[in-house]
Amino acid sequence: KLAKKAVKRAWSEASRMSSFQDIVGRLRTSFNSGKTRPLEYRLSQLQALAKLIEENTEAMNQALAQDLRKPAFEAEVSETSMINTEINLTVNNLKTWMKDEYVEKNWATTLDTAYIRKDPFGVALIIAPWNYPIHLLLIPLVGAIAAGNCGILKPSEISTNTEKLMADLLPRYLDQDCFAVVCGGPQETTELLENKFDYIFFTGSPRVGKIIMTAAAKQLTPVTLELGGKNPCFISDGCDPKITANRVLWSRFFNAGQTCTAPDYVLCTKQMRDLLLPAMRETLVEFYGKDPQQSPDLARIINDKHFQRLKALLESGTVAIGGGYDEKERYIAPTIMIDVKESDPVMQEEIFGPILPILTIENVDEAIAFINRHERPLALYPFSPDNKVVDAVLARTSSGGFCGNDGMMQMTLPSLPFGGIGNSGMGMYHGKFSYDTFSHHRAVLLRGTGMEKLNSLRYPPYSERNLSL
Ligand code: NAD
Image (cartoon, rainbow, N blue to C red; front, side):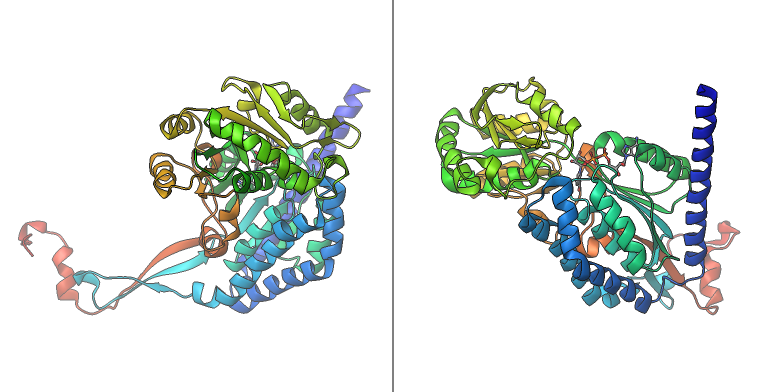
């Protein structure tokens, strides 16, 4: 019986592998035909993507509600409208971005033409996580299309309803010769990665990021890794407690804390913490009412595994606000924890849920030292009425992005690059940065055939050359 099972598994693996090979082969043939290169083609695919969103916003909101009970407002601002902004910006600027960039020359090339041509890489693989399952699949796709690539999209298998919807919709709107969706989890992705891609754009955890980079290394495929980690939030003395509470808690509890750029923990003095706690209590009632479980504006935890993980984290320190949960609904109340130590479990991993620990420090220097003792985060949020304090944190730390006196707002600007550093990732995207990420910057020098006398200066025998020239 076991042998039969093993044969069946091997057979389905083999048939999947060959179907993945077929898909990659089909896309590569299309890419090599030059089909994706003209501006008009790229615009047509971007417009098709805009149409997909326009005609299916309701279905997307529903899928997001089924997967995460994501409130429609949050789905709108963080998924569909952000994708639309990226598409509009790209459609309006693509012609300019695609222009060859003429560069400075030296005396030896003064009569030649030198420029940078933005070439597509070829067949790109985009792998997305479950927390913003449409945004994180389609915003990279906008960049891939804009730069003239073909693309395979691998949505997260964990956000199952959105995965199904994307697999159904994308082939109906995009050119199937050039774009495809592959579904599945680690097993399927591992098999898919056996194929050679020309670019891999991965969003997910640092753990899987390392697996992806190892697979890419075997083929020398360039990668962008958009990863996660613990984003510090430093709140200096003198901040307005209520405004700070509003901004920190909005960014922490948006999507029930399942956001890669959410503030993961707060560092502040004991005095500031004692001012913040009543303000936070008030904010939570304003945001979600007296019983947050009844609020339509609070998402749920994606699955049981993450629910159990978060429930266990509630054991670290003391619950100051919240702390309730309901397993049936995968609900965890917005929770503020105090008396948390740096060595507690909640400080050992990215929380990725509606829990916010507050750790006390003495001053900004201690906060900076704390931040610098840990992996470089995706985002860093200092709050202070004194710009010098915000500047000091900016100057003496390192992070993918940075926002003074708010949380997450830096990522709403497509004019800013979005990406991590160190453990939080490598590479960047959004707006023109996406176009550049998915483009190979090809150095082109076009020489004339004249002026051979001048050119002969570089030919051997060198003994006859006057180096002072
Ligand atoms: P994950 O790393 O578990 O999964 C991401 C993708 O990788 C999924 O499509 C999954 O199917 C695939 N995958 C999982 N295991 C694999 C394996 N062994 N081999 C090959 N592929 C595999 O991440 P997740 O749980 O979906 O998302 C949460 C993580 O993503 C958090 O760390 C979060 O911070 C991070 N994240 C980062 C960003 C960003 O923009 N930097 C955005 C959202 C989420």
